[in-house]
Length: 423
Ligand SMILES: Cc1ncc(C[n+]2csc(CCOP(=O)(O)OP(=O)(O)O)c2C)c(N)n1
Ligand SMILES: [Mg+2]
Image (cartoon, rainbow, N blue to C red):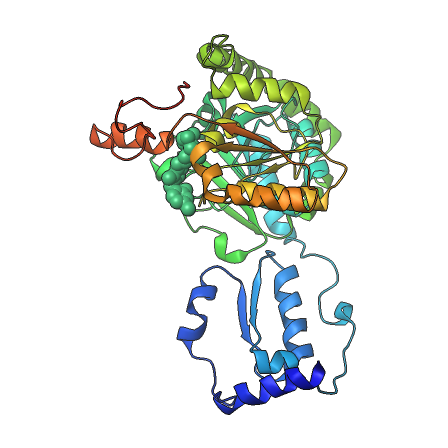
């Protein structure tokens, strides 16, 4: 077997110039979606390349690394020394500059209408405990982006729902009228910032921005930052918590009671707006009613993976998430074809946790062949297919922007009727 592989390698290397350095064209596709790229063109470079890959993948803002290994290198036999990975990656996480923490605290303590925006970085840095402490000591409402959902339980009194488009009325109202915005590990994508239209989700620079990110390149990228704090979010929040005295906490909580009343009023208003769809009791049913029923039976630690289009938006707006890493969303690129394999992956990683894939009919049809994988490998995922007979989020966008729609409803072309109706 080994001899055969080596023979293939020899054949291959005859036509392959192993001294040719990779050009930018070779790695162009991967560079746009990864942190670093390596072309491993010598087997004895493997320890160096793999250590550098793990270093890049696991440090700073974590992300994927692409390593290309040609077949002749894959089958080559060579002598190598491998050092411990622990000796090739940093110990601990970066802590922020004390002066930046102090400036941020000064703004948060004096603000009249502060708001915390929680992005996916908060969950990546396992900052939920420190976030809850800060929120409760300062009484600051929290809004979530798609990837931030779950960082704080949504039944917490300071939950203000989601921000951006789609978002919730409390989330967008509080974020857009805040005098100080504390942003935690969020890129301000077009979705989270409602295409940056002023006053819809954010009113920065009138609102002063405290931006916390482990990646310095994010600071001030889409909005000017009054205070840019570079560091691991859990450590930054721990330092902020340590800098607030009990007396400061009591004083600021007493000052913010009227502000908290407004948050409760906004939730009542939002519930009234959503009630016709979330309490709908006729058939065909609605997405919001379906999600409401799912929430009743899925335990808090149950995982949902979510498909593009209306299922992703409705889940963001009206499906409360209470624990980190239980809401797996395709995020702001929103690729169809993600939710179904993501559910399989989640179930493989957490065999004892219930996993539900909330997915539209269009998205489901992109990769439903993978159901065979679930059967072949006994992977019991629940698929909740929200069948509205079309790419209805796209149809609605076409109607709104162009006044007509095309090729977005799965109609029977003879009868003109969709096969299944649903609101
Ligand atoms: C790979 C890919 N192609 C196209 C899109 C654009 N797109 C976003 S939502 C959507 C329709 C999704 O249909 P469905 O899953 O049935 O959800 P619905 O909006 O109908 O509830 C499309 C085509 C996308 N996000 N990803
Ligand atoms: Mg659909």
